[in-house]
Figure 1 (cartoon, rainbow, N blue to C red):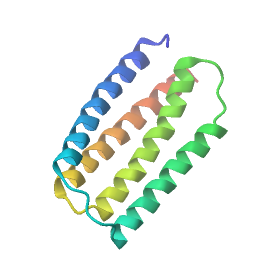
Figure 2: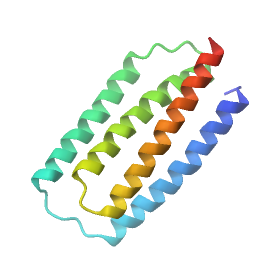
Figure 3: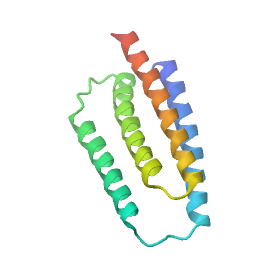
Figure 4: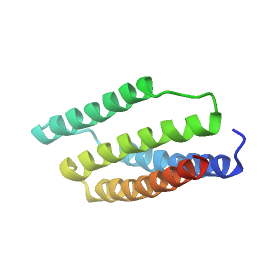
Amino acid sequence: GKDNVIKAKAQMMKDAQTMEIIQLDSFMYAHTVLPDSMAGMAFMEASELAMNKMSNLAQDQKLNGNIDYDFVQLMIQHHQSAIEMANAQIQFGKVQKVKDMATKMKTDQMKEIAELKTWLKSKD
């Protein structure tokens, strides 16, 4: 990328998501996997739907070759998918700590989407 604002935003996202991955890995390491339940199946379906939607949107996204612009467009879609997955966790999750993490992730993603959309508008 060339835009310093977007480069800084990308680094911030990378740092934040690295910490989220560490927290989720730590949780998974400390907890045993429980057998699937109806809520577990509903969560899996919602998550899979969100991932497929993101993949389809990314394939359909018209990229213009401007790395910063293309990154922002794809990241908005990625974040929207993450919000849908967080909603599935909030709805179907059983462990409050993970539900709280999902709520924070959702809030952070929504904030970042707004910032990315503002950046896009400033480039029109």
